[in-house]
Image (spheres, rainbow, N blue to C red):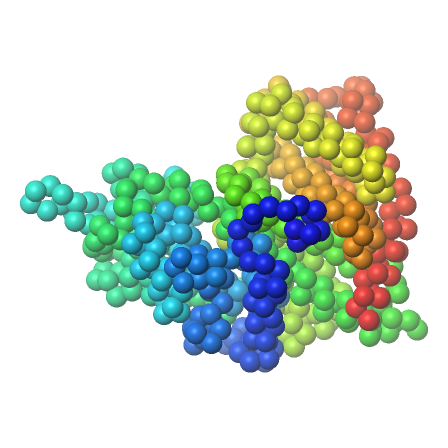
Length: 557
């Protein structure tokens, strides 16, 4: 949302709406020049990493990477909202190419957040000039995204007077996007003081950029192993100049980078749905188009359009908070990633189903999107890692705040319901209260030791917080008399119904599945969580789906 839609006026990081749109228009033009449909299908079929195309995108005629480089170092100084919109649009063209572009941004992040002025001028300047492909080298063969299990070592090299002149790096990295082609990488290695980021340049003796992996999807990107055998890195390439700050620097960017992956997934999922929606309007079955059949629209299209709208609202809200100067949004980044990526993956799967046999054929593009989008549920931390992160942090925050964290959200939704009674806010409020009760119950009964229980809570937390963001956006649009307000009311009601259903089901799974509540006490437990109020969210949901379907296909016509 723009500041105008939000109804606020404040100093924000990032571009104005006009400048952002100009950057997005450049991406649109790529579809007719460098990233045509035929070229994208060929890259996928032949597993080609289009290095020349990527470098042209960085060159002076296009310079897309300038969006995320601060102005002081030759860039445009774009913020999280700008980068989310750009990666979302690029992913709608090809998630493989978007991954290659995102790798440059990801590789630059440790320098942006932790580099010295000299390092920023040198390395960010090189990226801004378009002369460098960059990779982010953190993941390891046996550690994955667990940074605490880091095995790559950086041993100090001393001069005769005992001063550190550099570090000798030994170890291996795995699944590094653009790793085989990068001109330099930002590498995380363990030093005596702790994990530390280094810049390692291509061609450094002992640094081997391995052969690209053969992959299920995102075949237009390069994913390579990297190995380091006595690689000497001069001390001036230690990011920030002080060893041991690597984990802090990595955590600073996780909220941001996981939000970018969420935006990429959103773009790919929207592209798949767009194909399915267009197909439904043309495909005639038993005398009428598929777009007029509930079995098609209400099962395969509408739920995903609603979830995509919810994902977009949440991504935008967190991007806005980042651009407002907030930090420590690692949990919010995890929520955005797990919801948007799982949503996009399901949407792509149903888009294939929607096209029938044609969905399985390369020419129609949906099967490629389905293969591509699955990786978003895996890289930058799997969905299960995100569930671990968000459930643990939200449980602790709920207990520490004595329940105020989710109760405050419930009260906000109560107030919003007084202003807008038809947005589903009543059910978001009840979802937050029930979730709060379940978290406290899990804590008191020591169910937080059960990983499956924590995953069930994570899903409840995710849907509740995403739904509340959708309700907030709906309210903002309505207050500003935006043309989209009417359909957003429908989206918000439908997502509230899905959220309430999830909360109700998971509450019973946790309480009864763990043996905490036994059958004779079930009725009393259902009263405690206000089960009847939760299931009431389903009222008129099919009517709302009818209205949503009419809007979706009218808009696409």
